[in-house]
Image (cartoon, rainbow, N blue to C red; front, top):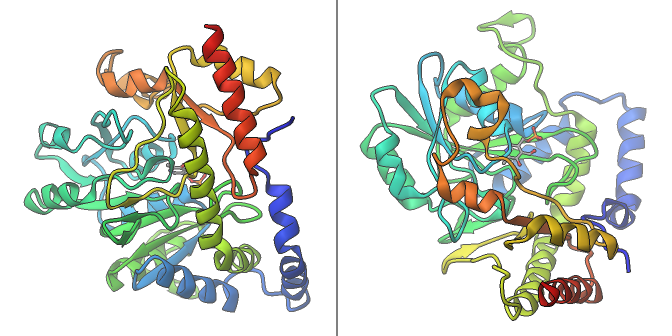
Length: 369
Ligand SMILES: Cc1ncc(COP(=O)(O)O)c(C=O)c1O
């Protein structure tokens, strides 16, 4: 049996009756940048995130960059985040002129270890960027409390967590801003690059609207230098069509995760994801931990099962950050996790037989060891 890592082709079959006429209409009306699809999507996604404002941008990386800039984070500032994330999180921090400062992750949820934040705060710290990794929110209450006590802003990296919940609150809605990616493989994915920032602050929203559009609120009147970082109309149209289905897709992901949990937790040596009480994980990625990860990945590959590694090298050990002075051993939990993580096939259209086949193959491999 073949089990792909994700299956965007079958998802397309579900939406094509709506997507193709929408694209045709955009071209017939020559409406490509801005316009009613973009404002419509911003309203709908803002409401979905329980946030007053939503600003569409052209990637999750831009969402992070623009949120940091609008919050006034810049040169000489330090921003606390985690080494277990995609490099876009720290690229955004560095590219506004600030320095990423890492804290280790929690060994159960793989999210920021909130007990480590205090020791990372210095007089230069301006912000905390928690990452809701794999689709599960970070422990936001202590993060927000520490931020308030130390006068720091919180920018949520919710790029993997569309629709996730923390104690009844939507991922992205709790900090000063929440940043989303709609890269095609995300739980809510465009047919190209796209992203958005949600916020409860009108001032932040106004600033980010200017930053995404060359620093102008009125055409050719530039209050500041900005970027070309707008969301385009066709992507917004695709996202509106898919947003209507997102809740059903999240439920399907959760059902598949439940099946995996049930089957894999019986196998000795496999650690399944933990969802603490009061959290709603949306399983952008279904990540297990195993000792012999590389051999298991090869074995599953031979059985026709595609898997991924998120992430094999923690950011503090990447060449790009060699100049920062971090050494192996600096973040032991992250390093331990990085050498053991394996992301299994996870998408809404995954069927029961495929989940069972993946679990069976993992069982066979673990028995043989
Ligand atoms: C945690 C995280 N942050 C940021 C990004 C950047 O998003 P994008 O690829 O849309 O720029 C991604 C996705 O790629 C991500 O997974």
